[in-house]
Image (cartoon, rainbow, N blue to C red; front, side, top):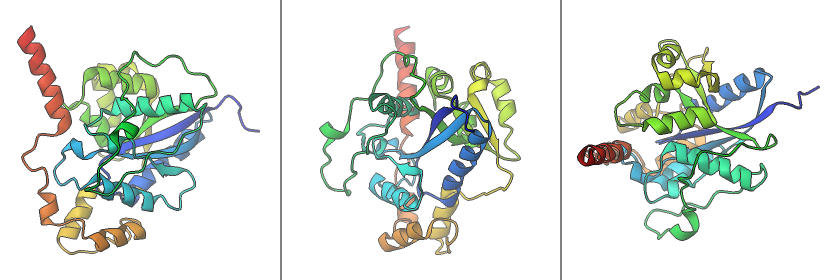
Length: 284
């Protein structure tokens, strides 16, 4: 008999997905197995949220193509879907605010997620007034009703360790992410995530809300390696879903030219957080 006290969980993965790979999809399966096996949680949904173009990462192709590829990759999934809200924002949105957006959607709908807005093709004018749905900067989340699912951030050990990169994350955002929502982090041999948690006071304080999942069947596929293979006219079959491979080839998405996109441009979070730091220093 199923434990009625289990907390329902929605796994949210934020990132470039440039392009989405089989490894991205495996993260969801590994996390779901782990969380369900604890006996405390029941994973009911997975959400892929591609970052918007304003993130300004080197080699980042348009959000339209990245969203479509993610939709193709999850076409046959019964529980993982793609949400376009983050990709539709004019400005880069902090991960903590994306988590809040999805938690508030669940609250407003009584636990049922509404469909995400449609991302139009590049070059067409987007209806920002309909899609923007003000990014919340309110006080910390109020206590949730027990019957509303909880959103948790799904990530790899590299994202966890990126918390230590100067100016990449705001300290208050890290505390908010791990404290108010929680992490489900897929780790592997060579990634000492537990030590990183130990060395961070913020992560240590909220360690009960950080779920480390060992990836015993290792998979070293990455979007960076996929793009490199494509630039060299090498096969990527079985590294990405077949529909994604077909879409990439049809639209000739990755090349030496596309990899130079945003070269010399400061990554959006670094630019914003450094500007905030300089402003505080100036006014101090």
